[in-house]
Image 1 (cartoon, rainbow, N blue to C red):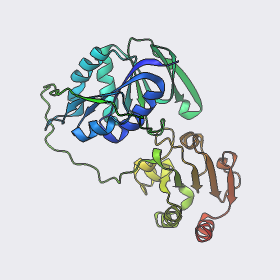
Image 2: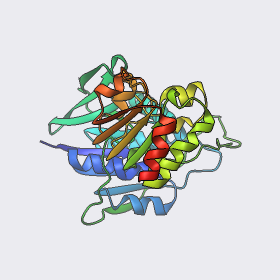
Image 3: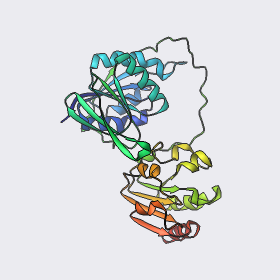
Image 4: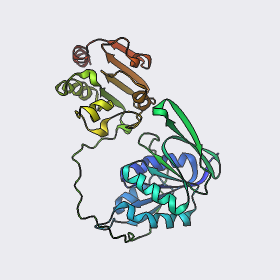
Length: 308
């Protein structure tokens, strides 16, 4: 069973291929709305049935200023579901769009299933990842906020059409005078095939170099548990894996000094192979891994790196 049509939007062009690919598995028709360079619209057409290009974002405007334009397009397209990337901006857009369309919203979708041609069930985690809730959106149009790693990006056999739909931002008296971006490194953990992850058992920020050497040897991305990013600030927050962080599904996940609380395990639930290194033989991670080594990671990891 598939929905008739899904509308896709994200202020991040890099998220559109994944969202559109997920929409293609759920609906007969996928329509993506792109705000930004024309090249982003053309790239997105590799993954969507049709692309509506709003044009370049106007200077001094914010993404939220285009909600009226999105609502207008949504009314014209009459989709059964709207997929939006779950970012801070995405959540702002989803809330404002829901008010204009009188649409139900489901946050942090872990999976989506079509019940019939016009109804979807969205599953998401509750109670800190200890359980999963299934919500059925009963409004004419529903909105689902989807994080990274839920779908796999797969281009269509033939690209869709790109239609120019230039829209001006709504005037609301607020002008963006400047944007000072954080100097966070860019990483997409959801797309990583190998991940080496650090927990508090690493001991110090200097010891991260041991894990970085292992990651470099096997061509892996570095990740961490929540305390490393939000408590110790040893790594960027976009490298934190867990129920409120990145949801990943690599081929190999190597957890170093991570105890394995449920909030973290939820984030790696899709991993094909989990390898745990921890000196505490009673750490919960050993109940969730495929291979486990009880030992000091400061000794085990360098030895493993050398053997590899």
